[in-house]
Image (cartoon, rainbow, N blue to C red; front, side, top):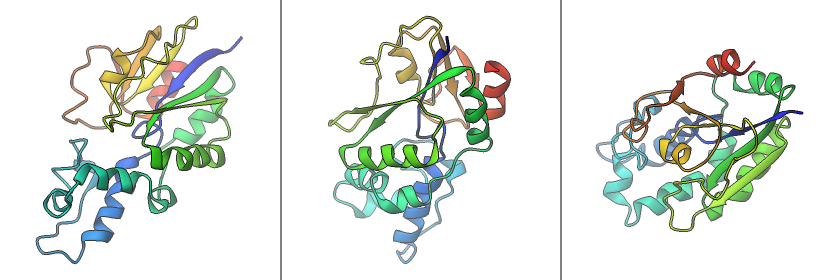
Length: 196
């Protein structure tokens, strides 16, 4: 029987920051003091360090960020992290693949449709919609099956579940991924080596 492998979506399987920055750069390129956002320097969930014009010019910056994540443009330009698709195909032979992801109401259905189209290897999709907008915590999904594994880019999500094995996907250092003393992976090649 296959073991259950729970996987976060944004900033774990796909490079959400890169797609987000592309939208920002398109929308703000003609503003005074515009500096192109570099996704590799993203370190703050609200993008204050690399997308400051959102916070300077929008009355509700967090809503603007959520709108970006729910836009067609965001999903049109969404890319896998290197090797993610191929490794997922290999993992499918050994694991039941379950995507467990937080969503905003306006991006949940688009996210499911993107997963259905681009990641046919997935057996199950769990979408958690926190209407408060903070998106933290996946405790409602206990992950208590024997030897369940969970990979996520946010320590709060990892801390909130009972998975037997938990890995922080840490592609780069941020101000929210430091509170973790468990196992860390930084690429899909590492995931392949660990789990296959």
